[in-house]
Image (tube, rainbow, N blue to C red; front, top):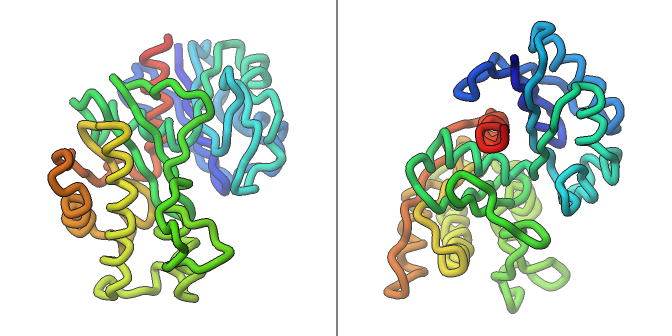
Length: 282
């Protein structure tokens, strides 16, 4: 029997198979279709091929956006990349075609599970995963499982620039609008990858991010914070040493700073997370 794992992103979707829930096949990658129905058809096609005709024992995967209460569909994509997938019965459609239970999770949360179980957070009980790329997202992972929540995790929307001294009037004063790649491009007028690593703006971003991490640490009290996304593990990047220094300064004597680590699983974090969920559920 095989297991199928998938990761539905705003631009690309990845699908892989696993026989032992310790590793998976070379993922198949394709452009994410604009509609849920077309996406399901692609995932099913590749899942059946990867399983080699064997029965599929379980399926799990992540998708961007906000999920419904029972985690069977994505109800809203704030980034507007997957509006054709909103309010569609994604898990139900996949279950019907593949004949097995399908587990769905938010994309940032499922990467957090992957890092907690297979990556930089291994061995820690409470792991916070934070991704900084075009936006900012993240989740709290406890004992390898996404912590319970009422409305999902939105660390990128915490208010930092309270008096708008940095962003100015008319811009939401959030962590995301301070440190994301989109925000940096809007302020600087160039792509982040075109800004030299020795530009002072990278240290400035580390300071802003540290203030957000201070809040995260005080509210969630993690053992380790794993930082991922293109603004963290790309080139150029917000350097981990600078983030560590500024976070220590921001915390002062309130509580010790937990371990801060770069994410280790790259583009496959969501697939590892899906495999981790199947390890828990099947």
